[in-house]
Image 1: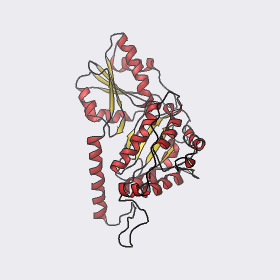
Image 2: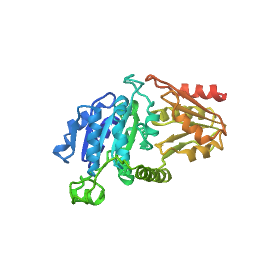
Image 3: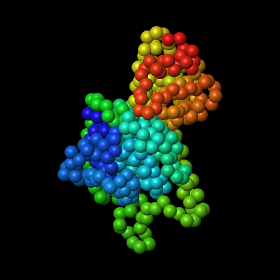
Image 4: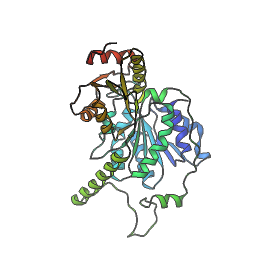
Amino acid sequence: MKGNEAIAHAVIRYGADGYFGYPITPQSEVLETLSELRPWETTGMVVLQAESEVAAINMVYGGASTGKAVMTSSSSPGVSLKQEGISYLAASELPALILNVMRGGPGLGTIQPSQSDYFQATKGGGHGDYHLIVLAPSTVQEMADFVGLGFDLAFKYRTPSLILADGIVGQMMEKVVLPPQRPRRSEEEVRRQCPWAATGRGTRKHRNVITSLELDSAKMEENNHRFQATYRRIEENEVRFQEYYTDDAEYLIVAFGSVARICLKAIEDAREKGIRIGLLRPITLWPFPYKEISRLAGQVKGVLTVELNAGQMVEDVRLAVEGRVPVTHYGRMGGIVPNPGEVLEALHRDFNVEL
């Protein structure tokens, strides 16, 4: 099935309570598949097409405030519209799952694939000092797997998780093993697992109130220190990545999502010619695998990042490398996808690697 379809199946099987979204290419199949599967008749899950992206993210804000497992999905221009609500979710310390299937921009751009929302996803996107947990799938299987992982991490740390997929992964079809069906949590389980939730219970003096507003500057600073402490725990415990052929690599490629697959093919072609290149694929774009890239920078002659953008992740790679070896970027924009030969040509151009 398509990556978008796998998302829909996985969110039902997770036992989620609700999905609130709005159609936009190239992720419309999420809402379409949920509508076809009609989970409100089987698990009781709410599926609602909102009147806009802004409405959808605020419905997520409301559902999350009650401790329910809720998600939304969109593509790049739609996620831009959701940024205020995402900031509110982060400031209110609410778990939620967001899917962005990226398309080319800026503006309405193209419906073809892109990775140009990296900055928006990993640097906050909305206003204020906050982070999202950002998972970058490169397969349809990971699209399905990251639904459960994203929800689990969101509830563990009480912060939104974002699955940042590019249009290729959303639209490609692959075999996928779907997770088993989990029952939705009972109201008692929700209250026990989320004692902070606004359930309508309690007294006038002792009732959970969910808000991102704090007019006392000292208390707002205290809130921000708490947020930052959570982010430090996430950075310590949740960095995820994959390495390929790095043990003896003379050069390193860093790429995420579908582009990592293209780069892996380029590396395999190069190794057939005796050229030792390795790949590091960040799975969590935030927290970013700085330490792992720094470690590998100590053994290679240069690092190439390959992205479907003008050069965004390359800034984090340069921070990790700290100037010890050259770091260059190769990217395509406008929905054009590079082939393995272009990746090898970039290595030759930047590092004079003989092909």
